[in-house]
Length: 169
Image (cartoon, rainbow, N blue to C red):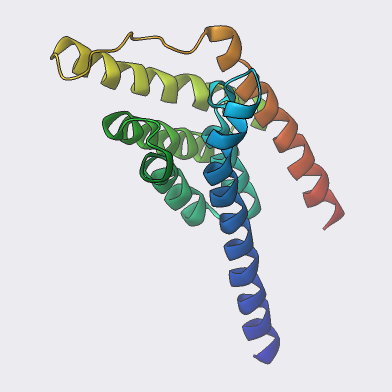
């Protein structure tokens, strides 16, 4: 019983540490983006952090992180705008739900690509509805597609690293 309690405490500390690192990265990312000639938000760091949280903590924590990251970023840096941060939350949560559903049915790499594509469709549909309604005055596609392809490639690498850790344990 004591061993189970110690593992639970270690698990809480591990999850807390990963969450702290993720939120800290989000906190400093805008400053780093201003120091380098490339806007880092274009490689979708929130998507990458959501998958890291999901894989290295648990499903529930990954979903919570996916929901709060965009709003946290809006509050701390003003980017993205609040409404867009809600769209991104929907996109990230839907990606994790779709990935969770598909990962045991098909290859993990394909499941993450499908999850990213479907969640992007959700995001762009929401954004289009608000543009058409006149609530948002933005271009539908603001991040070039070539940059949006970086994120799935990074996610596949993270899945590979995660599978290596799973095999060792």
